[in-house]
Length: 108
Image 1: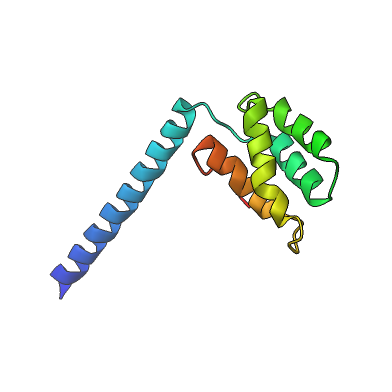
Image 2: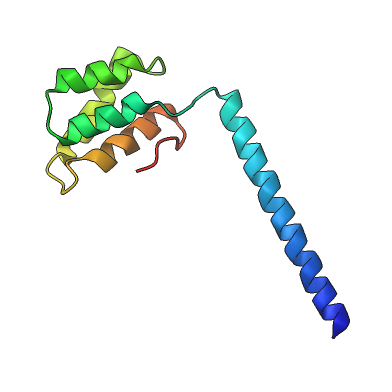
């Protein structure tokens, strides 16, 4: 019975080490891709959800150097149909931003 507990503790420690290793790899991968969260994207999402003018939202997206003009238009065009949702399209806007980046960077 004592050996069983030792084995379980060993497996638990191995599992925790693997999880920590995975998180470290994700962190380094995120740094290598040089993407980092930008508060202006969250401001753009809030502005979008408040039904502000599309040009205002587009200018907020363009403040982020990761997006070109066509990418900003694509983000808005993919999200515009969800403005009628209860959250004003906030969640779908951030999903569109993540799709444009190719990674899940912005939490919704």
